[in-house]
Image (tube, rainbow, N blue to C red; front, side, top):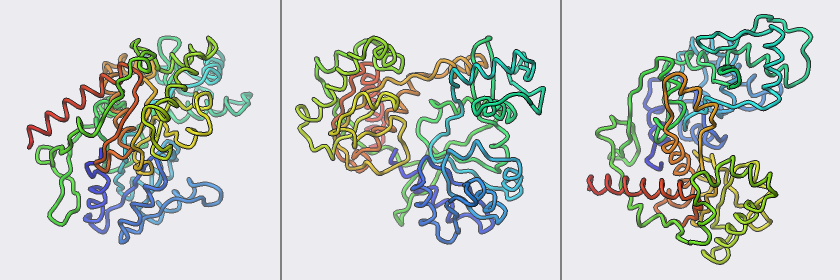
Length: 406
């Protein structure tokens, strides 16, 4: 984080041949606008609604062979005619941060799929676990949720295994339409995109970044990239407070299931954690609320916030944004684990996810939304003993690498 990946991508785009075509995707619209402004000669189209849909604008811009800046959210909806234009234009896909290639489904969606399966409208390949439609027309099925499930099966993105696990997997044919793919991220091998691409036969070149003589960042082979030059021991101070950290001592405390369990028991643990967040802001750090940011899982946010901290919530999966770079006091109140359905899927195919690396990558990406990206000190409350330990070990590892390179 903060090593100039996006800036290097801008240099790469600006130095590419005039007939090169790019689709740049970020989690946030503003990053697309940044790319368009930084590459004026490349005539980027930042997608807007055309006839009520950004997908229609994408379709139009691809036909014009325009360079395109958009968000991750649209990628899974690329239609065959759009993909045909992307393939013909030999587009390069630049993903700003790794893409979520798995999604778990709701209880309603599972019920819808089971209905289709029981009625013989879909079949599941016993080797690949891939679900396909037998009855393409699927007449007699109604309801928004059911029709959505039918469309997902039709798109080839639903897998079913062990008689119970239903999971959405990103349709690989969308990626196969691109000439090249560049992923701008940190700890790539900790993310589900890594085993997903390996399963589909992709090979990788690892790049780093370096600062050139004119001050711009550029891509380079990883072995000659600029080494880390940060003193993380000085910049990051985790809160050591026995009483406030006690809530996170159990290994699974503050994971999503912990929150669900506390909610079922009446929510006392969630209320206590919320008090700790306010205590960190008002009494421990005694900081201005404008310098404070905090997080929990999105669905528990309402239960934990009040008018003082509500404006300063930052989603725990936030990345690729600079809008919180004034924040110097943080509260990270989650304990990240990959959903077991996704973990089971990759394990079944021979790839075991490293849940600790995954958790660490999510956490440090969130931390790097703060003032640390400008080299300023930050103070952080991490009640989960597991997450705090992962951060402390990572600080030691990066500091050792930085000292070795000095």
